[in-house]
View 1 (spheres, rainbow, N blue to C red):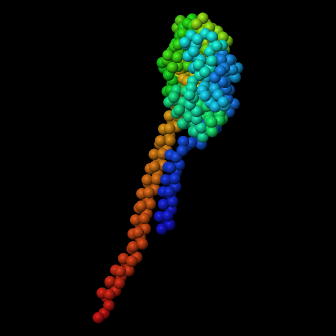
View 2: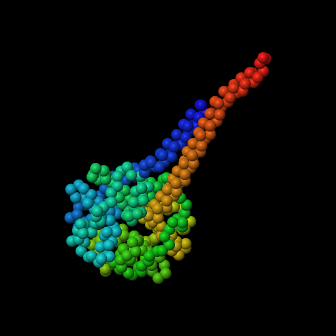
View 3: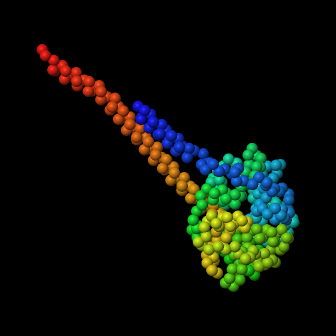
Length: 334
């Protein structure tokens, strides 16, 4: 019976481990509270876009959380301001945050796993999530935070496997308003600036915010060459995803241009890295769950076999006794 109990215990433990793997979102023990930024830069709906852009530029942040009566009512991002530039808004000193911000805003719990937060970002095409509990703003999680957390769990292969090969370009002599329209219409955060056939620089949402809007320059009269970032942060296709992620974080970038010599092969963004790492972690989880299920099934089969064997062993002495009595009765003299 001891063997049977031990096997049953083994099956129970296996079952518990399977349930533990499947229950709850926090499978890896890394939650949004572990990676969030607690010092959140905020603004109000009555602030102007110009003052908001200055605040974002001075604090080197890509968004402001908009509060009303201490409640999160919206979020103002570089993309929101880029859209306004694309619409050829010119007086950002009169345009209010209320007219430009994204609202309602997606918020998350501090107990949500980083994997689930990454899934929300990808499915809703957003790069920042305010962390709220009991209607109180606790912090904010950005794509950088999520990527850093996921990378720490599962380093991957090479950026050539995850880069986007469809790279949008614009002439260095084009206006910033034209570049903004290209980015907005294609749902992208940057364009590569070209001079003839050579890469001259790159224009991102951040460049437009800091070098046009925050400086109160007219986007229809400002040229790409005057605001683009150069030289371009470029890496070869053989660069590792882990190294690319560290490089972006160190240089405070959200993207890298992938080049072989002078040829542009693609662009890799934090979105690409986050999606790749999250997909890999989900694949590992699926394989682990399948393995634990097989273990539980095997333990159950062993338990059943041990019970059958125990029943057979317990019945054998009685059967032997009956046979001996029968033989003894036959051998007795009359």
